[in-house]
Image (cartoon, rainbow, N blue to C red; front, side, top):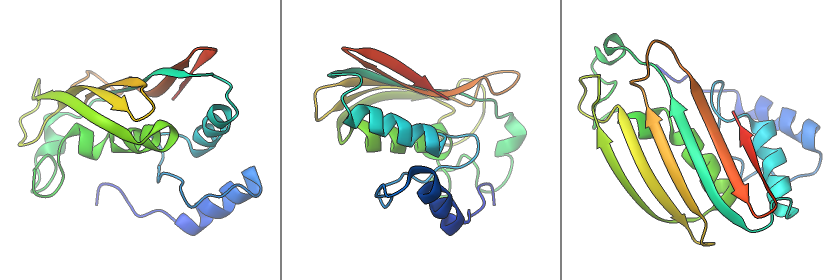
Length: 165
């Protein structure tokens, strides 16, 4: 299996120790290589504390490398069992941005297969509108070469900005 089941109980205990009495039941599920839970919690506290003021924009950027052999099994990149970059790799960032700023009101996106041959997309570019009026962008690809370059999330507000990842 590509993404192993994590020891959620251990992660929850670690988070409780790190952040005290914060309610963690709404924590997005993240794993190594994705959004760092401690950074996400720090960002949540900063947003709730009005550190950035009115949120203007948010951005998800995932520029990863998956060569064709990654998709040469019976399930990677298939619509029925896996999906493409947005459903398989960038989903954790989408979950985090929705948790931090959501709910997301609308999304408009374009998908393509730029380098890899799979049923689903290897590249997606999209725009989001949040219920609070903030706008967001998503750039996600597994067609970056020759290696993984970036997996980040940024928030721009009237008082400043932050980039994590």
